[in-house]
Image (cartoon, rainbow, N blue to C red; front, top):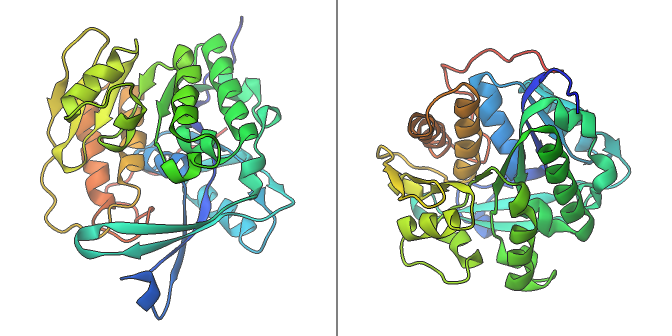
Length: 318
């Protein structure tokens, strides 16, 4: 099969919601700050700020937030030609901040425009025009049609030689209405034949394994035993890189003393890691690049912090 020139470095499929966050416990907040966030979109912003050419596949509700969401993504240099405005509403989530940067989320997303994502929203030529496709277990979890869209996108990418990266991003509350842990495990395994790079987090995603490991290197090894290359995020402890049949390589993360909010740190890590791999950085060096991006995120409120001072100018997108 003949493929078009790879005009994009990274595209992602998923939902971005309106974010309303407080500077403390949500119930005590006198005011909320509006922003936006969604796991795969957060990763795209991270990569775009480093210079990657990025695009988003989604459905955006035509409520009062819709135009602003798309403008915000475009301002980050992200192509939104495959994230059209459609009838419907956008999901909203609230972040309640607690001590040490830990946060609690409250969601209002049922029936949002993005939950109606389907295979028809995934254009084969757009997938073939990108070097990497990022997918997420959250997109699988929000609806049956979005899960089908995720599977279809992965299959298209495999057919055209686009690298598939997948973050299981296990959210038990989302999967509770779709069959629970068994359904989440089945969703992971249906995608694995098309996945080139798995991007789980410890400990949350270890629940998807048949036997839950007691530590992060054990989880990295167990995921790699599924015959996939693994870059496992281990919070402040760094990351573990593992090839099938190999032993995990630990890439420690420098300490961050001024943590304000850990929202979106793993997503930023994913985006920076994929950006670095696209720029031919070795995986260990790419992980260090990713650590730096995640460290920037956790020093700020919300999923999308202000751009770092050293951000690259936004590239042209297709």
